[in-house]
Structure formats: structure tokens, C-alpha cells
Length: 383
Image 1 (cartoon, rainbow, N blue to C red):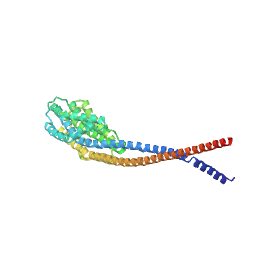
Image 2: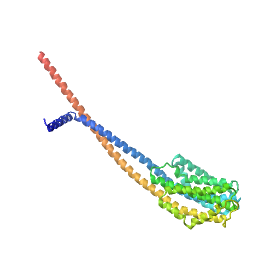
Image 3: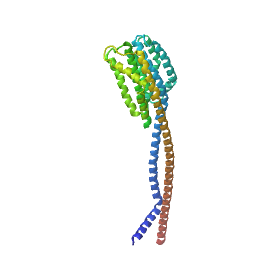
Image 4: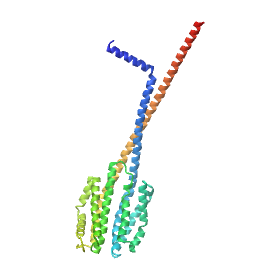
């Protein structure tokens, strides 16, 4: 027998075996295919659930943008009120009285614009976000009481700075307390925003803690001077974080701002103050000059850089949501198609099982019939 004849003979045997056990073989194959399809279905379901969770996190972040961006104005005006209030207490009510009264009107205006948003967020986000917002509302409700204590000189300067700084930090940290979505550009944009907000707050603290010594004409202690130094050095730390997380164009905006007169005028005055190591300041400007020089610099950071950061967060969030919606559609289609395939294989299993059982009973009946015929034949021969 040649090799070709052997192959043909082998194929005939396989064909005969398959024909004999066709439905059983098809049923086993259908089981295997259905199992594979179920694995694919599990993959689609897992991706679908994870995508929904990420979308929910980003949607929460998007909702919080409203709060975070409305808080920017509160932070900006509250920082001014902090510095003015600090000087009112330091000067025993002889300096900045009219300024602080005017500033309180502006602060109340921006707070009233964001009040409903703050109240709504008591029940949004995770427990950390809700707790933070509740603390913010408590502080804002206590604001008028704090102002009264400032006007009546019932608070110390450190207590005044601590009250406003805690409120400001809570407002900054709202986005930081959110469940972080797994969307890189969104996360880094939020990190850049938080770092820049803290940098700007340290500028405000430098303004506040330098104005009082300038009114007095000197630092009362090395600790007071070191406090101002600390705010300056912390600014550099937050700028480094900002440069690592922000877009290069945003880093360039800040770098360019620092070359402009609005910024160099402020740094020139700051260097004169910090050059004094002991005794009275030897400077040729007043605390009013200092305030009116550093405040435009802080305003410029808001107008130039902060607005760009807001646009980045919004753009990246919108892009991430659009991409996730596309993934949800793809996964939904994949799940639907896989379910149809699984159902088809399940139908094939039942179909083949039915035919295999039918064939089994048919063969059993044939064997039983043949056995009966043989028995009848034996009985006949006996007779």
C-alpha cells in the first residue's frame, strides 16, 4: 500500500468516525467555542465596567470644575482680606481700615456668587470632598464673627492669618480630594492647577506677612523674618511642581511674566526688605507702596497663567469624556455581538445534543429490536 493510499485510508477512517460521532464531536466543539466566547464576553464586561467607573470619576471632576473655578475668585479676594486684616490687627486699627472695609464688600460679592455651588457640593463627590466643603461653609458662616473680632482687636495677627489661610487651603484642595480618574492629561492638569494655586497663595502670604513689618519699620524677631523667607522658598517648590505638570506653554507664560515690570518691581522691593538682617528697614518705600506693588503682580498670575490652566483642565476633561464615550460604545457593541455568538453556540450545543440523543435512542431501539428478533428465532428453532 502506497503512502497516498494510506493517507486516503486514514481519511476514510476519520470521516467514518466523524460521521458516526458527528453530533457528539460538534457538541464538544460548541462547548469549547462557547467557553472561549464567554472569556471574550468577560473581557468586554470588565472593560465596560472600568470605563464607566473612570467616566464617573471624570464627570465628578468636571462637576467640581464649577466649584474649583468659582473658588478661584474667593481665594483671590480672601487673600487680600487676609493681608489687610493682619495689618489692621498689627496696627491696632490705625492702618488699612478703609481698605479692609472696601475689600470685605468685594469678598462678599464673590462669595455670594459661589454660595449655591458650595451648598450643592455638600452631597457631591466622595466623603473627603463633602467634609472639605462643609468645613468651607462653616468658615464662611463664621466670617462675619471673625471680622467683628478683628475690628474689636480680639484676635492676634497669627490667629487672623491662620483663619484665612485654613479657609483658602480648603478651597484650593477641593480638586485634590476627588477620586482621581485614570486619565493622564486630566490628572496632570489638575496637579498643575493645585500647585499653581498654592504658589499664588504663598505670594499672598508673603504680601500679608511683609506688610505688617513694613508698617512697623522692622522685623520684631528673626522668627518673623524667617516666616517671610519660608513663604518665598515655598513658592519655588510649588513652581517646580507646576513646571513638571503644566504644559510647556503655561510654564513659559509664568517665566515670561517674571521678566515683566509688574513682576520685577515687586521682586526689587522684596529683595530690599529681606536684605535687612536686623534693626529698622533701610528702604525708601512705605507699606502702602509695597501693597500696591505686589498686588498687581499677584493679579497678573491670575489673569495670565491661571486662566490658561482653567482652559487646559476643561479641554482635557472634555477630551477624556469624549474618548470614554467612544470606548463605551465599542465595548457595548462587542458585548452585544459576543452575547449573540454565545447564544448561537448554546443553541448548537442543544441542537447537537438533541440529535446525538436521538441517534443514541434510535440505535438502542435497533439493538433491542434485533435482540428480540434473535430471541424469537431461537424460540422458533426450539419448537
